[in-house]
Image 1 (tube, protein in one colour):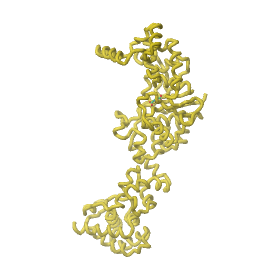
Image 2: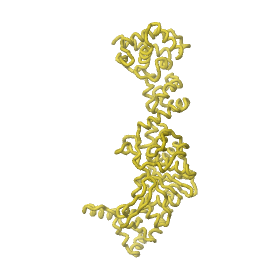
Image 3: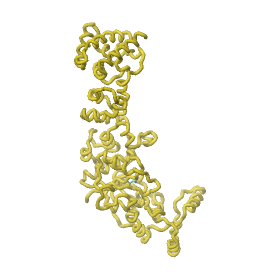
Image 4: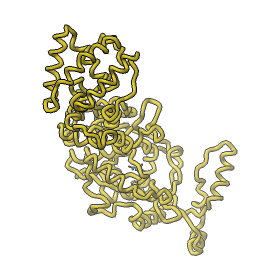
Amino acid sequence: MTVRTRFAPSPTGFMHLGGVRTALYAYLFAKQNNGQFILRIEDTDQERYVPGATEVIYDTLRACGLNWDEGPDIGGPVGPYVQSERKATYMPYAKQLIASGHAYYCFCTKEELEARREAVEAAGGTWKYDKHCLHLSQEEIQAKLDAGVPYTIRMNAPTEGETSYHDTVFGDMTFQNSEAMDDMVLIKQDGMPTYNFANVIDDHLMGITHVMRGMEYLSSTPRYNYLYNALGWEIPTYIHLPTVMRDATHKLSKRDGDAFYSDFIDKGYLTEALVNYLALVGWNPGDDREFFTLPELVEAFDVNRLSKSPGIFDVDKLRWFNAEYIRRMSPERYLELATPWFDQVLGGKNIDYRRLAELMQKRTEIFSQVPDMVRFLAELPDYTAELFDNPKMKVTPASAAEALALCGPVLEAVPEGEWNGEVLYDRLNEAIAAAGQKKRPVLWSLAAALAGQQNTPGGATDIACLLGKAETLRRLGVGANRLQNA
Ligand code: GLU
């Protein structure tokens, strides 16, 4: 048996992180079994059509490296891979189910259904379709069909007994048919199948051996099994995945900007870090390894180690992963990725990005922090003498004033052509030693004056190099002024 898994998103315009994780696991499982990973677009809900939404799915999966073996754009032996293009496929199976008594035509109008639902609910009951049309005679049905009365096709669900099945993650599941089943619509009035019908037909026709999807489908799976059995088809292996949550009680949410893949990419998270972390939200390798490339995940992944408790997506942990990925990348790649973020605040300024990148790489957790961290290079922040109040560094405004007075002439004496880190550092050191001062507080005071802030990426000489001689001296002057007037 060749393993075939599928990712079957509905094109909503966004890729939910839970969806990315489902796709990832389906991909990993297929690949580690030398099987195929199939992409199927579930767009039978035409009212919810969002232009461009399929591209979002393609782009996200591609960025994550989850390349599909068959799909809408590349075709394959069991296409088409877009449900709306398969419309004609479903009806014959619906008719087969009608013929065998597992389904029936329903001519109830929306209004009729609404009225009956209200009556049931008013009496304190829970509405389920009441099999009204199941009892129409053959002649009545034919007459309505001939008259062109709009219809749906419903499943004739059992009302008694129970259905059991095995789920790889959740184990043995048993549902009372009276609760889990209802006469759900299989074919809608517009001739389109519902998800509930199409997933069964397509998974079978596409030869899907392992169905991976969110746990919200656990309780509807008995209905799908009823359809598989009615059609005489083999039931696939089910691998339902727990929901990805922000914490024990909160789902990831659109409003909080933590639900979608694009939310994180826009904030400057790396796809590799996100994929690596997502793999661990609900699965663990059984040892303490945390860093995995996609091929390594293919090796290590094990469906038997999927957890059935909710996957907690911890943004702090992701941030940590991201910082690690940034630290481990080549300086060239960092420079390339950081450049647009530098440009946001430094564009047009004469700043040596390569040098800046060297300082920033180990300090960057996510790229969206970068503009704020380097903004001081474009413009000296406004500050008061309190900037130089730093007990930890043993710096006071008075000591800082002395430090700047010491450094000023030293820097002034360095010729433009020798303005580099080594020379600056040596000269400053000499002068500090000669004055009998301590290096740390003096250089810290200098850095604070050059940056106009207490925390700086790099030390005083790094910043002086980035600013150049003229701007360095100008900022020193501003600092001396602030301290004088304090
Ligand atoms: N289209 C369904 C969804 O987006 C797919 C569920 C499944 O994988 O069967 O939730």
